[in-house]
Length: 286
Image (cartoon, rainbow, N blue to C red; front, side, top):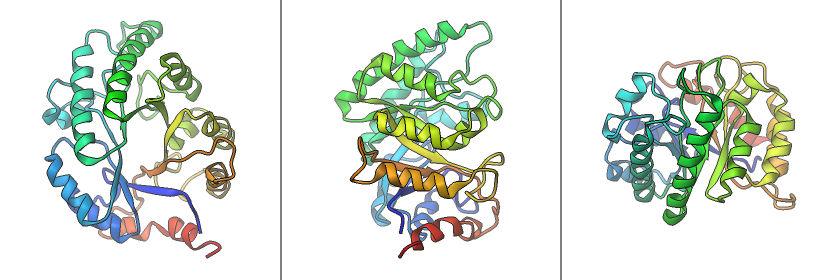
C-alpha cells in the first residue's frame, strides 16, 4: 500500500460537477487533501466549510494571475494572464495577489501558495525578467515567513504555455537558492518537466533530497490525462517518490503529490472510473 500522499486537483478533476461539489466527490474517492488553481470566486468561509464537512486538508492554490482585485481572477486568467512575478511595471499587481492569497491561506489553513511567475513580455530580456522576479520573490518570501506559509515557483513547459518565463528545473532551483529563504521552494510538476527535460527519475533523485521542493504534481504526457494514459512509465516514478519519502531516507522528502490532470473521461463519474491507477497503488502489497 502506497505511503505517497495524493491530493485531488479540483480545478481539473470531477469536471461534471460544480466546483463546490467536487470536495465531496474527492473525499468519496479516498482523497484526504485537495488543491486547485484559484479560490477567489468563493468566500473563504464557504470553502472552509466544505473542507471541514468532508475531512479534507487544503494543501495548495495559486496566487491570482493578474489584476489588482482577486475577485476578478477568472477574468485575468481567461484573458491569458499567467502571473505577474516576472513582469516589470506590474509589481503592484504581484503584491496585491500575494496579500490576497495569504489571507485565503490563513482562513483555509493552507501551508503552500504557488506564486505564478508569468509570461515574459516581448520587450523584456530574460535577465530583466529574472531581476524583477528575484526582487518580487524576496519581498514575498518575507511576507510568507511572517504568515507562516511557503511560496512555490513552478517551471511550466513552453509548448502548452508559450512565453512562460520559467521552464526548467535548474533555473527554478537557482532562483530559490538566490532568494535564500526556507519559505520559497520549487513546485515540481512532472508533466511540465517531462515535456521540457524528461529523465523524471534523475530529476526526482536530485531535487527531492535538496530540501528545495515543496510540492509535486502529476499528469501523463503528452495529453495531460491520468497516469497510465501516455508515455511516462509511472511505476518506477512512484517507487522513487516512495523511497525518497521513507522515514529512513537521507534528507527525507515530506510533501503532497497533486493530481493535476484532465480526466480522459470527462463524463459523469469519469474521474472516479479513471482512478484505477490510484486504486492499484493503494492495494499493492495490502
